Amino acid sequence: MHITLKAIALGVGLSGALLASPMITVEKPDFDAGTIREGAQKEVSHVFIVKNTGDSTLRITDARPG
Amino acid sequence: MVGFDSIIPPGREGKITQKIDLKNAHSGEMIKAVTVTSNAKNQPSMRLTIKVVIKAIINVNTSYAQLSKAQSTAEVILSTEKKDLQVKKVYFKMSNPGGGMPGSQASWQGDLPLFINFTMQKPDSVKADGYMDYKLKLTSTLEITEPKEGEFIIETNHPEKTQISIRGRLDK
Image (cartoon, rainbow over all chains, first blue to last red; front, side, top):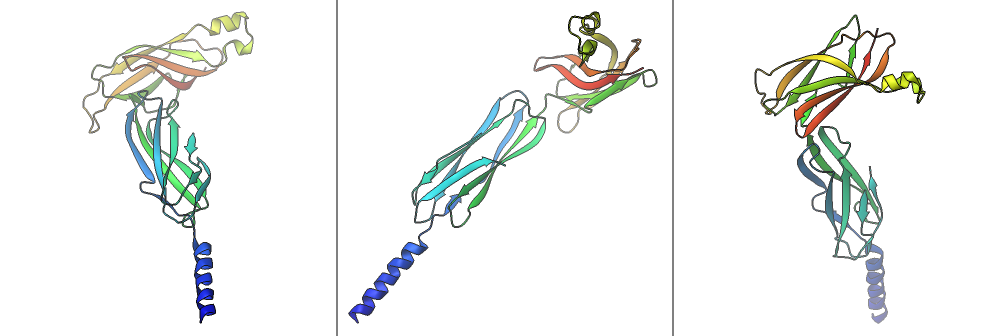
């Protein structure tokens, strides 16, 4: 009985570690910068907020235009 | 240009910054995307976009114009919100004056602007978007001995857009 409980605990622990995974969530992945008059601005920039909704570290390896 | 936070702990937020250069942007809608690659289980590759609409100060209906003996006039429509648009002068600038021989007499002559005669018809109505069409008619009285590639430079009285250039050709 005791051994079985231990085995179950170990199993839960292992599966928990195996299932732990990072999740990426961006509330507004498409940003509309509106209308800009020609020559009025040299550039337009936007900061996207990225949330890790998972349960282990999210590692962003690359973010590039395209 | 894209900047990003590379490590985001569980439950925390990070930033991805995208910058779009507008210096050479054409008028109209522009959508720029960023592809984000991560170890995320749900979306290892994610696309983010920025949409921007560039509103032209003066829209030109053509990107190319040609004048020759056979086709001695060319019509260009300039659209703008400005009520009293005027064209001050129009000239042709050769892209390769003097055939690439710097200092030669031909090159020196090539630096001189070739003035183009023009008339402009005022708009009779305002369009739904607030723009008005000005019809500019170019006429060449120049004696062209050799075809010339280059651009037509249109100088206007618009304080935000004093010069418009259209690629073009002067032909025999």
